Length: 539
Image (cartoon, rainbow, N blue to C red; front, side, top):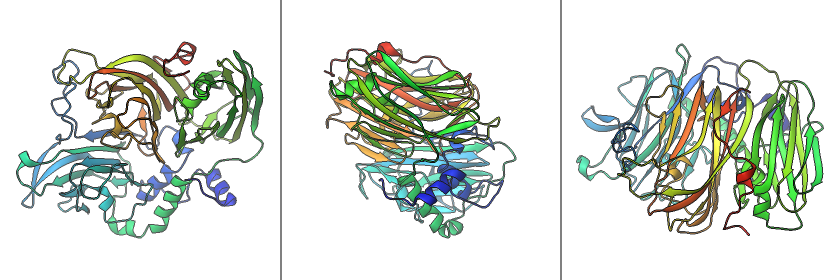
């Protein structure tokens, strides 16, 4: 993914926070594409404000945690309703009111037939028609970075894709599927996850127009290039931490004072003795802003690669699996910042860290960067999807306060004989009475499908590690969010169902990346005890 880039163009782009566009208060396709590739905008609470929700094909027997079938797993057959439109029977996958924008369309199936239609603003005729259950066949070129095919994708049969091109609307959006077979009993499973924003009332949005998009080829190509080859900010003098850190010791660097932001972290580590994976789990990165620590995570997990420290190549993070890490998370602070590395490993570790900063204009929407880590060992997974009484949920993170959730890494060891990830993600935001996001499977959340067991990389994350075709042993998934970030005013709760093909146990470790106020609090997080835990699968 990494290619040469003209330094002057990269510096200009980073200084301005994204691709240039004509100033406008209106939400447009162009403004959303600009936002997608702006590191600075990710560090702010959105203005105009919006909520982010998802409609999926989750099993409609799932109604409430206190009722039967909460873990029902026929997730390929759910939809909103059936409509008859101009004599056609169309299955409604999404029907939402605006102003808003669809930010992610994830689809998979066993046969790619049928016709998808996108209706905007209550219009009788669709503005966008896709002649298959497959967004790669959209009638405009979105590009490799905005239309991702899954690792097992085939043009006609099994597999799916994730479509990240924004589809804005002023009054509403309805997405439907017309099946070629009129008998619902013969319909194949149609899995979908559609994420969308709903802006505050009064927001002006320019509705998606296919003709205009056809004229945006250069803009779309620029966004694709940037997503596939993000620049690294290296302006000015970095804060440097260069030391050999002895066991049970730490080293730190204080960054320039004032209203500034870390724009990039470049980290290299080395050790002459001991197991590399174990070292990366026991080397802890801690960052404090304005006197409060908001980042605490093992170095390998913070990198987005996970236990075993594999390669990762994405928009926010990259690592080569040999000790070199780059992160592009923008981390603002008002007065001061401190970066510290603590060595909980049994041997000395060499660390070379450079933190590049620049001025930041602080306002009420600016948020602090947070990264929290949590590990639980020996979690039971079950294939009893009809077990109405058991608690088969594991909590990634619960945050109280204001913020925007921006991504996660799931690093795990699977003791079960085969696929562990049948469970859905369940995300509660603020005053939800039903989850804002109820997914269709663990791998679906990570922008793939059908239990993938091979590493892959996209701008939005991927699978850094997948050791065995059965999925037994080490696995890792990561996902970061651009336009599909999830704002919350007082609560963000992210659970995953612990469902599998066969019973067994797993060790899960989740690293969550989010922005929030300084007083936003995580209810549970792991620390030194878990980071130094003896794991039977490590030397």
